[in-house]
Image (cartoon, rainbow, N blue to C red):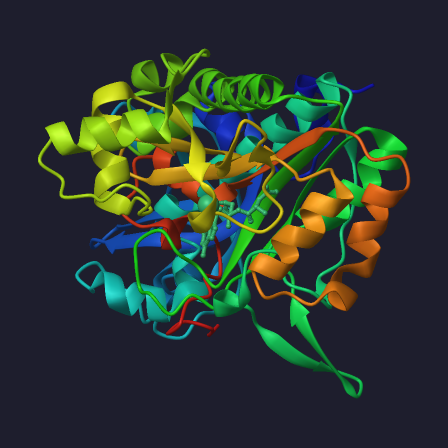
Length: 436
Ligand code: 4AD
Ligand code: MG
């Protein structure tokens, strides 16, 4: 196996992060990237060049053979250049490359994004705004977050599975279903892999996936997308307690590791890594009934049996930090939720709620008894024939089981303290945004 320091030596192009590390001082190197900033005076052109890993200052002097191209090159042109790295305290990152060779790979037309444009404008040219330091950094944390999610489940012996995107029966209710023509049939885009994961646990016991989910969300909020990435897990022979432990362990694992391994990125985004490192299992757990009582004490006018909105969730999390609320009235949860046998008006459903974002995940125990499930389908006005395969899972070797789904974008918005989840995904899809 080659290690990092061997790799950069043999590469013909040096990555900017390796220059900023100090390991290239005095060495003649080549860099490739894009012109991020440019400033000229009579005898010198200053560039900031960016690549995937960082930005570095480069200079071209009038007496250099690169002078003509340096004058000509525009913001966001792609270039390759060479020079001998020197230390310079005044340069961002503390190093500078005085350029002796410059090649323009793709000369850019006038770049439409400048410093003073609105958030709205940047979102309209997302395909270009992705080049910003901010988006570059958020995408790196997103990649690391997903890595930690996979790492966690593998460590816990969960098998990764790949659910379908085209589905024939709803998981989360008709209001947010996207319909589509599938040859000559009417199908939907998946809202959740849960039902299919339930089939898979009867073979693999512990499964998870990270996959897109689609919601025809008409509401324009800071926490809803029409297409989002969904971490979902399902476990055979498990209890509500197992489920909450699994979820809090996952969230702690991700937060701890992002705090530790994304220091540079967190600093650039002005996120407090110390606060993130303090997110540790166990989380508080309260019942729906207790939550209602707490909210009333905070002057919320909530009737028993009503679902919580964003404001209620925020108020609970402000007091209790990340917390689980469990045991909900069955009327406000989905058809598949298992009822408490001693109190069948309540279901074994649990939401994980976090400060600023509110609901981060929903999970629970699934109705595993065939007769009860048939009753629930009827109560919800759902047709048995649409769920035949799902009912089969209760006919052949049913087991108590639990699972959950957690939105990747909400997790990231929370970790990075972002105002809107729209910035956690490269090409957001909302009621208004589907371009580029
Ligand atoms: O609460 P939801 O609808 O629950 C389910 O879909 C379950 N079937 C999951 C399961 O048990 N396997 O969605 C789960 C999570 C939410 O808590 C939220 O984090 C995220 O998915 N989510 C959204 N994220 C962004 N935009 C949307 N429109 C979202 N809808 C749900
Ligand atoms: Mg939910």
